[in-house]
Length: 318
Image 1: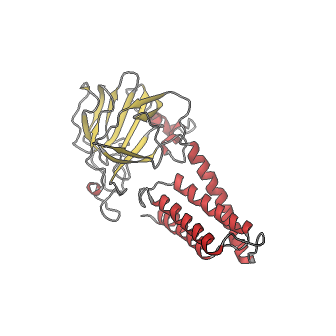
Image 2: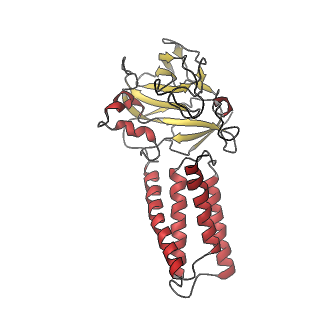
């Protein structure tokens, strides 16, 4: 866990909850501003940040703690008051500082919610490209704040051109039922991640348009920027192509020209290419240019008719 994750996803939420529990403001206006600000911060970081470590259920635990703190306060002391403020100068400064943080949290929450709405553009639906299990969306959605791929839509950055087709992609982890996705504390061996070695399945019926293998899996968190997609398979689904990338070295079992049915095995999830840890990258695009295969026109996609955004969970039953 990096220091930034520790600060924003553990220390800050727990500090705000402790402040709310131990130092509730006396006046109802001050207490109300304190409550709204803390709620806004928790909502903002809960929707925008990736909850893999700590796991996806952590923001819900914070929300439950906040409800318990408020309920306990109201049960023991009743509603705040009398008076609007009744806070010391030092407490007032802290409340106003957290209120400013709450405004930023509210902006984050609004922008994240906006990214959970499918734009009114062309969309294609695919089957899940993996077997039954539990999966976490790491990058996905329609705003750059929750889907980093969208930055490659910027025509002003020339180096993004060859990767434009992946602008509306999803990055997906496999997780345990409790939300964990690795064995140990920041392991460098990709095999210690739950995602590594999971079968990758064809999300449509069609033909293999490209198949690349032989690129090594990188130790975490190193990335191979000379082979951005790593090992990958591109499938011609008829009206569009689907690209599945960062596959495990030596796992690909299809070659260019193979005919596929939905659910056929393509290979295994790995950590090849520009991947900081094992995950499956999947996107849809129009066209497959010969020299720059990922420079096609990006298309929004759904899985089982569901538009997925960061921190969404896919539970696939047997």
